[in-house]
Every structure is written in C-alpha cells, then in structure tokens.
Length: 436
Image 1 (cartoon, rainbow, N blue to C red):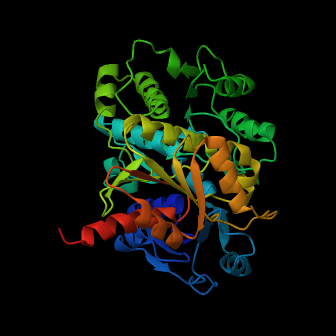
Image 2 (spheres, rainbow, N blue to C red):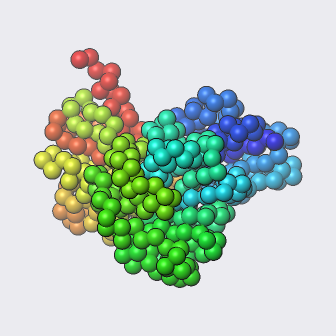
Image 3 (cartoon, rainbow, N blue to C red):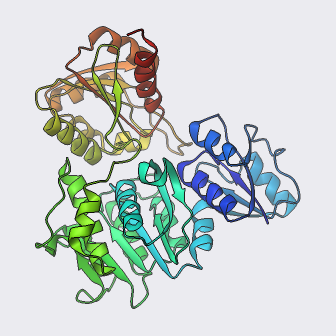
C-alpha cells in the first residue's frame, strides 16, 4: 500500500501520515513550504516534496489523501484523476483508518476540541488505556507530537465540523464542547451549522454515548434533536457535582476538564485519579502556550484563537492570571469571510487590552472574498473594546512596533490560526540569542 498525502504539513494530515507510517504503510507527501511539522514527518522516514505540480507522486500510488486546503482543480488532484488513483479527503481517510477499533471517541465542538482531546489523551494514558490518538495540536503528553500509536482497541480523535467532515467518522462516544456558529463559507446560517452537529451526533449507535454540557442550551438542543435517549445515552458533565473542578486557569479550560472527568467516570475510572491526572496536564501547542520572554523581559503567550468567542475567553483568562500586567494582543484575523461575518463580535472581544492588528491571513481561497477596511476595523475595536488598537499591517511591522513599546512587566499575546505564531517564536528566539 502506497499513500500519498497532498498537504501533508497540515496539523491533521501530518498526524494521519505519521500514524500510517508507524503501522507499516508506505507514505509520501507534499506541501508548499517547510515547517516543523514537515520536518517531523521527514525525520520519521516519510519523503516530502515541496513541489505540488503533480510530478511528485508516481503511478504506483494506491491512494491520494488531500487536506481541505487542496481544491479539486489542484495539479496533484487532477493528475491523480488522470492516473485513476483513488483520492479521498483527510477525514474520509481517518474514518477508514479508525473503523477497526472497538471504541472510537470523537471530540467535537466549535471551541476547545484540541485542548479537550489533548486532556483526554493525557488522562487515558495515565489510566493505562493505551489509546491511539489523532489530535489537531502538538501535545507534551504525546512526546510533543499530534498523534500516538496505541496497542488497545481505543481510538481517540479530534473531529472537525468544517464542510461536515466529521460525518466520515463513526464514533461510539462523542464529547461535544459547544456549538457556536463558525465556518461561514461552509455554513451560511446558524441553523445549518447546528444541523451539522445534530446529524453527527445522530450517527451514534444505539448504545453510543454523548458527553456534553446539558446546561448549555445549544448542546442540549443538539442532543434532543439527535433523538438520543437523555437518560441512557447522554452524560451531563455539569451534573457531576461530586467531582471537583481541577485547578486550571480559565472557565473554558475547566469546562473542557469536566467533559474528561465525565468520560472517565463512564469508562469506569475513579474521579479522584482522573482529577489527579488532569492537574498534571501540561497544556498543548498554541493553546495559551507560554513560549518564554522577549529581550525586554515581557512574557510571550501564543494562542490559536481566531473566533471572537475564543479570543474573549483567552483574553479573560490571561487577565485573570496576570491582573497587574499590561496585556498587548497581536491579532491576526483568519479569513476574510469570518472577519466580515463576526465583525461586531471581534470589535468587542479585547476588553481594554492594547491591540496590534495585522493583515488578514487567508488560509485557503475564498469564493466570495470581501476585503476588510483594516484601519476602520482598528478604530472600531478601540471604541467597542475600550482599548488602544493600531493597524500595523505585516508581521514585520508588528515586530517593529513591539520592539518600540514592550516593557518588562508586559504580557504579549499572539492570537490567530495563521503564521502569527512565527512572530512569537522569533521574539523568544531573539531573546535566546542575546548575550546574558
């Protein structure tokens, strides 16, 4: 079997490729640019090309797996069609890969699914359950990787709703964090977005289980519309009053932890042991990740938040943790359609912080791209969030601005799902290279 992964540098597809390689499958792939994830899969013996014109894979390829960022008219997909090579999306391939496992746990929701999956992986390992794992972030508990090859019949995976991708999976247990409208290019209305979760939860078998927050009206609505038996198929994470919350910063993180506590109780694990394991959880990549300090001494925090609800939760948590420090946010909006659709919510998400606004990061082609007046956006953020907000344009200009304004008692928070994370790395790396 020879699998070729187009877009192998993606956080999901890189994990799939590495896991298939660990299972003894021949895997090759391609992407646009060199990244740490690509270097990681290369180190495992997977050949990766940075040319995507259709010449990097051979006719003996059995399957082409593509990321959602690779459109149907991309040269590699067109070449695969010419050669008669079967091609499927990453989530379709993930569904086929996990089908042979007896217990399939899928973590879904608009926000928090990567952190919740990482928490679950950490606890299940501590409990000796030896899971196979695919997660959309790098996790210390997985030796800094985004995957794990376990030897049990348990498969834990992060399930994304974009373009209803999670419908390719057939979980026996679902953890649902929340349902907050997103991906407006794929879901033109709140109802269409909600309906995707209803359909996904409806795929549970008759003995399947949903773990969620039934005090959350949207989560309850999904459970009820999916036709689940509330008494036997739904575990209310908020109803476990005898389980104390672990000491973690941020309400949203504590909500995620309660889902893991509820899951482990369902799996027959003692609450005290689960809580003890959770208190050892070291977080994960780009989720309120403290990267180090700048040359001025400011604390650098990197976070993947790119939806206004996520930004508000992250900002609130950092201010809770560092109440006496000035908080500077470097915000890189992610996709024009999301920025337009949630424009008002974005302007209200920064709560008195100092904001440096960069250009929009366009992760994939947008069919109905509408440019955003960034200077006006900055003014609206300043007004609605009660803050200073400056439009700085490029990441290089953001770096120059930070060099001019940072002080030792600041916290600088990098927000966005794009390459703004590179600037966080550069600031910390520059500090490491400075003479003591």
